[in-house]
Amino acid sequence: MSLPPFVSIIIPTYNRAQTLPATLESFLAQNYPRDCYEILIVDNNSTDTTHKITARYIDSSAVLVKYLFEPRQGVHYARNSAAKKANGDILYFTDDDMVADPALLHELVKVFELFPEVGCATGLILPRFEKEPPEWVRRYLWNHYLSVTEKSRLEELIITPNDLVYSCHQAVRRDLFFQAGGFNPENTAGIWIGDGETGLNIKIKNLGGKFAYTSHAIIHHIIPETRATLGYLLQRTGNQGFCDSYTEYRVHRERAKIIPLMVKRNATRLIKTLGITLMQIVVGSRSWHFLPAALIYFHKRNVYDFKLLADESFRKLAEVDDWIHHAG
Image 1 (cartoon, one colour):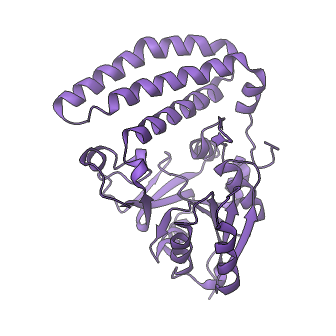
Image 2: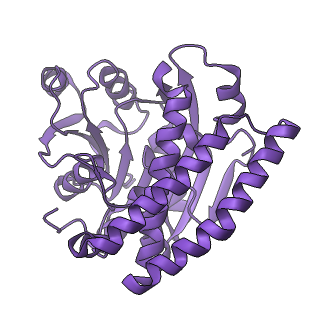
């Protein structure tokens, strides 16, 4: 009987010594053959006890655990650098505040084996709130705002050409990941460059890879009290504005189109979005928190567009396709 595919679990971490052990314990407890996966912990300049915690698991675990250090600040730099040192046929990316169910690897690998056309797979992400959140958070943020699966997604299995994957729960075929050029960086040492897994997924789609979702591959996302706030919603929507302007620019890659597209967006989409949001608030399908969030989103898009317009070196960064080998 042949062995299943070898999987590399890649966990970037930055000052999460409090949650990292729970993440590691959950992946060490997988019902997947011990000699068929490895865990790579990528320290992205932590100043807490991350290194000591990792050393403890390296010395005592039945599964191969590796410690890597990535000096370039940014979670996707950490993911890309670890991928180059990983041995897996399948690269599984997660975060340092995630707790996996024991069958996670088995269920994801099963999808790849059953559907050769699938290049990227994910599963069910459930929130694990550290403290009971306000009602508006449970009601309106149980979705991409907290990187958890929509409550309405009831399907057990989806195979689609469209992206439905977050990088905190993302498995990718190794050859396709490198062919795509890895993740585009996002927030890098306080400077927002790209669109992270969105960019990777677009590149995977352009290469012909399909995406899979299986509700049997379950992981829990630890949500701290600080994320169940208006401040976090504003930060998240603002960051999405940066991402979307980057993604839009990469489609046309022409400086001359930046201002016309920005003017059109502000003249049409902004007004339409504010109108729809107000209507949703009135009928109770959204809370008032989304009104300032919409304003922040469009403001950040304009900020990013003006930076693209004024800074040639920044535009060149936005046009990089292969971040695996880019110096950064």
